Length: 239
Ligand code: PGA
Image (cartoon, rainbow, N blue to C red):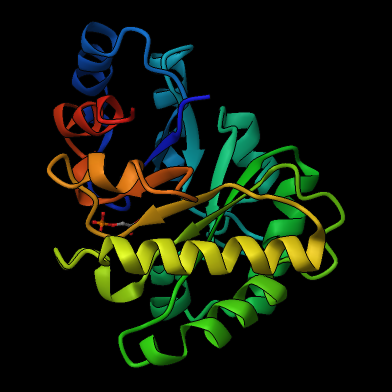
């Protein structure tokens, strides 16, 4: 199966970018599968309708409650009914800018899985935490997956915070080392081999090398996913 290529548009591309993006993919990505594009919630329906069988649509976040008095929030059921089949949870920007903690992320994961969404669960250490990445990642994973009975729809994304949007990519040796650590941790605790994506300054010039690595099951791309040309160039670098 082809490795997973996930775009994270964050709060960048908007409605007006959808037609051109989809048109380019339709024309230039014949035979490419396992493409997921995560877009701002208000754009899920438009993106999903426009991209149909070409790409899966994902949300960039959702709330943990099914419904209620949470002004401005969006539930897993809402993103699902808008057309998303994936949701990114625990992204470092959510953790650091919006103060999401492991407990909150855990509740979101449980809620999203209950709705049948596939969860892209992000973990990763900051620059200050680099020397103790094992304990940081272990706390994030065990906290995020606490009480999650069925892990079949969970995909982990390893995103070292210091590599996100900075142009600094983890070395291939670091990626192999940390992905190996995550795979072992998950297998020891849950008896499963979960897919692990790498994220952090992935671009067409480095994706081939990263995607060829052992234990890298795909990539999560921010900046380089905004233009369809770059996104598809990354998808085509899968071997
Ligand atoms: P980047 O972002 O590719 O721009 O580093 C990755 C991410 O935040 O998911």
